[in-house]
Length: 445
Image 1: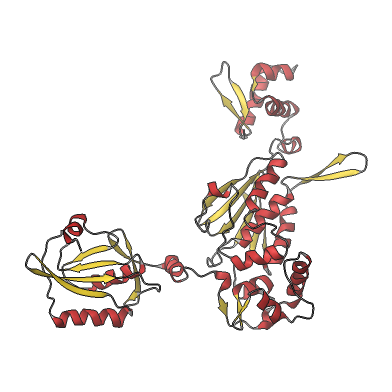
Image 2 (image 1 turned 120 degrees about the vertical axis):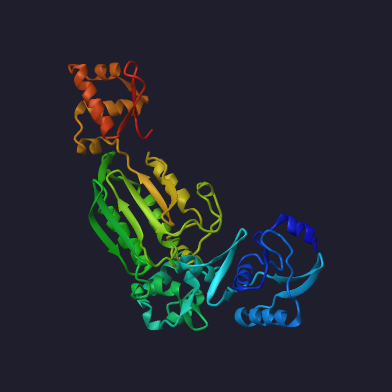
């Protein structure tokens, strides 16, 4: 031990000094156990002065017993001489289990010992545990056999499950790792339960439609997760527009505000990857006139970043059982490919790349509508000249006043300037440059 170096470097995540072994000393032992481990030196002030410690048998024995009896750990405790004074050294290893002192759990943040509270304490206890893999005393009667049989048929047809119609439901659940030591997992209930919300109140999807930032409908979709995908998907379709394009003599194509494949992938991602430990909030889809916002509780998982997310990446999920069941059912074709499919579908539809954000302790996907569609522009009350101006900017990148006068013969300059000012006010276009030589561009490009 190079105690000179330790004194010189001072306190930190794994080193702390105490003049005596009071309550704060025992809190530090808990914090070391719950963080990275560390060493507590008693008989040294926080200004690194050696004050010495009574290291006779009785106080050392009392400290040792208190740590063992109150915390259930066995640190290494020793004494050494420094500058003619005794120093007590307590070496604490990182514990695989949470260690409390007087009913509270502590951690080290730099040189500070702090109590672990609230959601952080819950996450601390559940570290390394998947929500969907936790078991409880659920009855097999909670399982909706029809839903399970329907899933099994799909998975067998996809070649992703070997099962027989004669298998009873416990055999199937066992094959799917949803029944462990005779107990059902959370995944079994939320995927195939008759009433999952009986246990998980907010494990549902809210689909909200807004008009001018005011909610005009709020659909709460409950049931098991497979039912939520289907019903929430229909609720979204009922809240967006579709038009028909004639291709050839006999073909009529549906063109939605957003490609349905992108909507379905975003919806499935928001359900499969949400943090179900966060029981106070639901998965939410908010539909505005110009965008859809998909939100699920729980930030990116397993070291994933938004930049990595946009590239081809390995699958990493906080709900491996749920993700695997969606794969077996054919709702997910390749693990980790959902974001790529969303981006590809939007690009093929001529829409902007989606925006991804970590916000509100969750993850968001924003899909932007083509607000320059002629039908949409008419719905905003734009006149023919304004729509022509927008079309010109789409084709040529920008528009000057002389361009506008040329494509709008018979309309005076003052009126055309008013038309452009209205487009700027509606945030459809932006003005660039001074009045002389000013150009106008679409705000989204």
